[in-house]
Image (cartoon, rainbow, N blue to C red; front, side, top):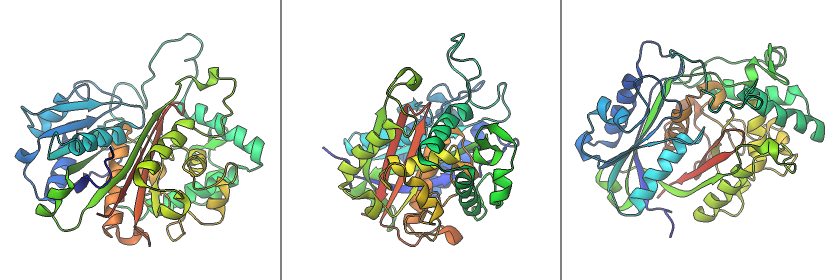
Length: 386
């Protein structure tokens, strides 16, 4: 069985991402959800089930379905809290789609939210207490290993990574809901303070607060709510080892979970040549190098040639295959559980031609991708027109 063309996105909502000190976790959920309700033209009482994506629960929120039930007063219906590293948001969306496609529910809500700034611990919470492996481990440090190996193998340097940051900051500068809304130069990126070589400050996505919401329904019911809507075409999820450094065959030149998830999604959507058939994409650019690896893992370029897409302008907003027209994680921000749902919001707006200055030229097929952990889990979602 396939979910292709069985599930419609009829409403989306998204708060402005950033250092939202004046908003609580609940405030952001309410704003995103009610924007989605308004967009879909439905009342909260019509929601039959919901999925909540949160990866780093803080004090008093995020640990269970009640974290969504209480702020939205969505009581007496099934609400499931989802966590799957940085793929948390797309995984929540995937679960909502499967429930609707299976015929269990007609209308469901998917919300992703994360409060990462004003909390006891900073950034991503480390889990596990191995006395050696956890010592000094950071997300920039782990992904920097892939960058140094790629540099060594394929002969590129920091100037190529800088082009990714410049592109995504330019896109984000046109996005009123992005965390960073300013352009940067290649020189600024290359000369920025080093975080984990070769990553400088502008090679890394920020620590951000945010929330986004999506309303799904059966495709045959969508026209009862609105004339213009998009549908799910394919989905994929793959999990590999969370300890790739124990695998002597792991070359740090890509993420097998992304490759597997993409193959699943392409098969379900009937896509045989993603480079030609995918119109635009929102990919997981937690670091500039990650975006280049994603080009290759998603089949947009051959291994070792992904960097050419950014150098040649293929993935620019006006290129043949725009990538991260929203500004990406690099500029929009990355509140873990919210990111994937925010990507679905962006795909939907682009497919419906509602992205203003950031509108891409071709909108047949949009792809959203997240990869989380040390390249351990990936989710790919493909949306298109009915």
